Image (tube, rainbow, N blue to C red; front, side, top):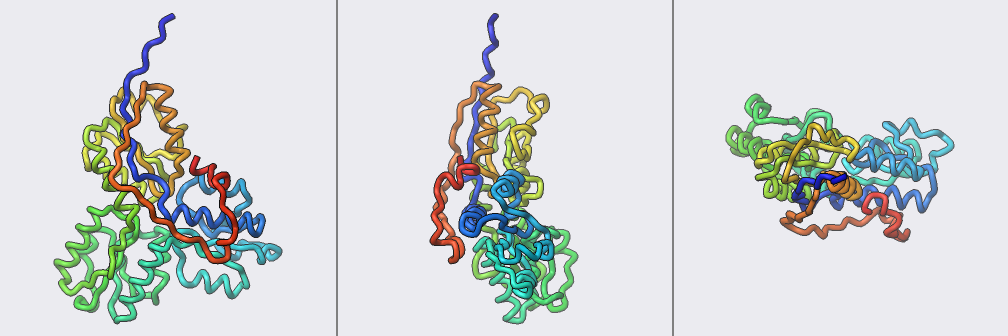
Length: 333
C-alpha cells in the first residue's frame, strides 16, 4: 500500500527564544538549593510562569507555597526561594520575622526596576508604573514603595484618564515583559500630557523581551501559523502572540506542550513560525518540532537576529555548589 508523502513544511525557528538569563538563574537557584540543603526547598509562588518547570522542580523536592505561613514549623530551617518576578519588601521582612532562611531569585533586571522606582520616590517624584494589574512583577514593584506613592497605568486610555496630584513631578518605570510597541505608545501619551515626566536612567523593558519580540517581527511575515511556546499567565509569551499577528502571521497560538496542538484547527500549512517565551524550556520547543515532523516533511530554518550571552550569578551561598549539564538537562535538553 502506498503511503502518501508528508506535505512540505518550513519551520522558521526564532533565535533568541526561550529561557532568558533571569529565568535560567532562578531555576538554577532552586536546583542548587536542593543539591546543597536537600529536600524540601520551599518556593513562594511559581518560580517562573511555566507549569513544566514547576512540576519538574516539584519532582526534585521543591514545594510551592503561596505564602510563608504555609511552611511547617519542622521545616523552618530549610531554604525558601522568592520567585524571579520579585516580591514586595514586606515578604523578606516577614521571612526574617519568622527566622526563615531565604534565597532571593528576583531577576536582576527586575531588581533594577525596583531601584529606579525607589530613586524616583527618593527624589520626591510620584511613580507611574506602566504594567499589568495583578502581575507578580507589578505587585513586587509597587511593594517597594509606600502605599499611595505609585500609580499603575496599563493602556493609552489609562494615560488619557490619569489625573495626578502634581503633574510636574512624575517619574515612570515599566514592567520588564511588556510589548515594546504598546509601551512606547503609552509613554508617548504620558509625555504629551505631562512634559516634565522623568524617564528612568535606563530602559525598564528587559533585553530578552525586546530581543524575542524583534525576531518574531522579522519571522512572522508570510507565516501561515506562528506558535509561541509559553504559559497563559506568562506576560512576555502572550505579548509574542500579539507581536506575531501584528507583524503579518495569519494566525498565532500560545501552546504549553505538543499535546495541546489541535491538528484539525492547524490544517494545511506550508510555513510555521516558532518561538518561545522567556520562561519556556528548550525541551518543549524540540517536542513541538518533533510533533510537526511526524506529520510534515519539515525543514527548520533559523531566524536569528542577535545572540545572547548574558549570565547572572546565583546567590553567594550557592556558588560553591557544582551545577552540571545533567542537573539542567530536563529543561535544556
